[in-house]
Image (cartoon, rainbow, N blue to C red; front, top):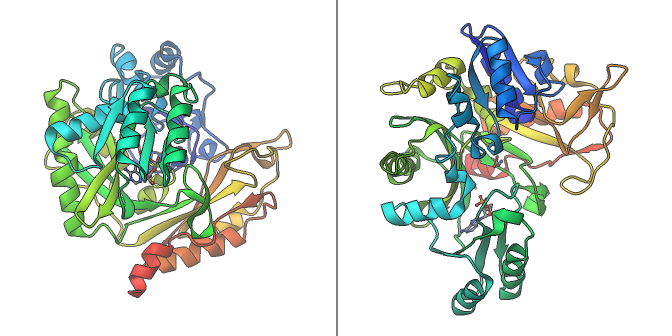
Length: 427
Ligand code: AMP
Ligand code: GLY
């Protein structure tokens, strides 16, 4: 079977690497891809927002399955558009993608179906939101309703910050994504992510992971897309995972079916592990980036088989097999990220880093210059991923590999895994 993968990040390189290993995959295409993905797949320069062009490409190249990495094409209706041409898409239809595309949509489902999440209220105007803020005070979490590239959430510890955030969002800082604002109780606890496949009705739990959202060591500095991750997440004990499935994910999937928008694809539950048990922070309708990298490193099952079972509504009775080892990813980013950064700096040493058979370097913002040299062209650039018997061992191996990469314009966090390693040590 020929497969088209959509995306260009570290997540997509990990997916490409894993899809290409399957005997079921004949030719793997990727649009637009990056320098690392080009080693696993045939990269094509398609406008992925032009669904008619994507459908044409699929017909011309006998592609029957499209795997979508990022959320934006799904929220924009790629799965609906391609289905009309008989092309299966791994990823939800537009209405089901609302689970990520609209925070108020998800919160309303939580309220209606008793799914544990932060107390909340939704507003379509500034005056009412400010009145609610006066009544409830800080700390409070202010969220733009729609997709805002990870920037639409402000955790406000004082009322002045919350007020400014409400004004900014209704003032148009996030365009149409800010037509509504959700105000939420601030939850306390450790964050974790859990991933499950869903075929519209049946669920197949995958695994848990933890991300590091802040740019600098000690969880300091600005928020980023994620500076490192590991799987499994020790905070997600088997009991906690069962609670997440029974109290959060299963009722959501039942709700989506009842609402006439069954969910098909991978469901990413962002969780807060509170004193009252796991609560939902948000859903994403895709794999996490960088969480997907350690997940794919640990997955023993054939990813094409799992994707096919998902799109063919055939997950019932299925299982996924995982390497018992832990995997940890250190993200290397261009200095300046998540703010402004230069493009074009030279990177070398990836082959040296990958001499360890338990290390894989997934590319994100990379390209080749006219001389064929590897250069950085994005904020997050490399995802150095390693396996180990413990998270501490995976961390040692990943950082040993990072040391072999020569990229003076890059930086990375030195403490990826600290929470899990403290838990492993019992401290
Ligand atoms: P979201 O885009 O909804 O995942 O929010 C981004 C980040 O904001 C989350 O990963 C949390 O760190 C934080 N956050 C969101 N909602 C809450 C909440 N209700 N309580 C505490 N932190 C939150
Ligand atoms: N790493 C967080 C995300 O993918 O949303």
